[in-house]
Image (cartoon, rainbow, N blue to C red):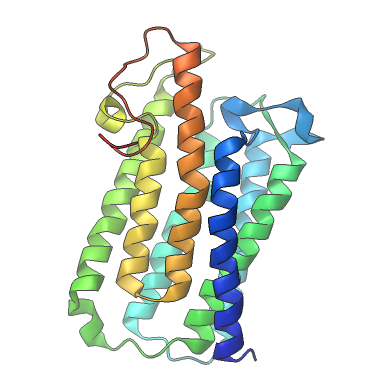
Length: 253
């Protein structure tokens, strides 16, 4: 068993790593999806790669959650259930809606994603499974839980509905890329990523602990640079791309 003090030390290092990586990701383009590149080594099928990236966090989180002896109250099971709800979509739904079956993803990206998902699953699973204080039923009426729960589902809706707009751009026999319209695409280039940031910010707020906030921080560190890359890509590819759109935060960035 890891002491809470040692756990916290590792967790602060983990958060510091996200802060260090953020400016690095702003300067490089991670090569998968529309940014696929041959310069990052051997590749495998995009759909299979996506599944391989996401499965570890479910396994690791669940293992440490259920093998720990911390009390598992209804609020804690809700935290766990919402986490799994998100990843059920990312593993069993999202990859199979992809229209670009021929695309590939570098193994190096998969390995880095597995590294992240392992530690994210460990920090949150070990906390809720072993170190977490009891969340009694009154937590369900706490403003942090209520607001966080609303944010989670609002973010999930934005994320999934925006992904569906992108998927529908290739209905029928269409190939290639198109300018997306509808929903929050009116204001930003990556509402799907914006929705995911809201989602995990809500999850962090409703559970109110450092491990969940570390996940929200890492989500921002990963997705904000990704959205900026998408935004630049759209502007370079389409001369008629809407000039009023921001990258990820309406009216801001």
